[in-house]
Picture 1 (spheres, rainbow, N blue to C red):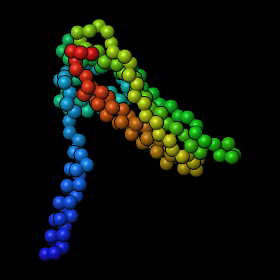
Picture 2 (cartoon, helix red, strand yellow):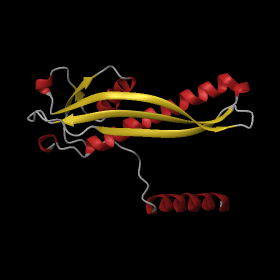
Picture 3 (cartoon, rainbow, N blue to C red):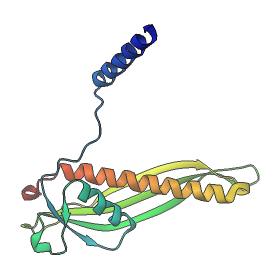
Picture 4 (cartoon, rainbow, N blue to C red):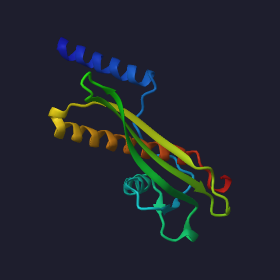
Amino acid sequence: MNLSRLSRMLMLFSLLALTACGFHMRGTADLAFKTLYIQGGNLTIKKDLIRSLKVNGVTVVDDPQKAELFLELITEGRLQNILSLSGGGLVREYELVYFVDFRLRSPDSEVWGPVQKIEGRRDYSYDDSQLLAKQFEQDRLYEDMRVDAIREIMRLLVAQKPKKL
């Protein structure tokens, strides 16, 4: 009986602490448009971006005449920079960089908005004796940065009002 009451009190305290700090579940984005036309190359980010848009109630259309907003995916890329070397000249740390460039345009305007760049950076230690594991880690870090870029594009799209680009 006493343990049950203590667990209830602890649960209540936890819920109060979560609501007091402003925590709320991630919901769908409040986008001001319902149709979007995506143009540009077949970048790896495109498929997951379309999926994220669909989850948020936006239809990606094939006909530009039906779109309320245009998104052009210009380029995406990966870079790998050496951060540190061992005394013997072997690489010990890398910096990974993922970036995507895009721009937006309203259908009633012929002028594109400025090119926007989203960039993610991660550092990781490297060891030649763990080549497969480090390759997996590198791929995972790039994937995480790509997902972060999609989230950032969605945040920027929330701020867009199609008639006022």
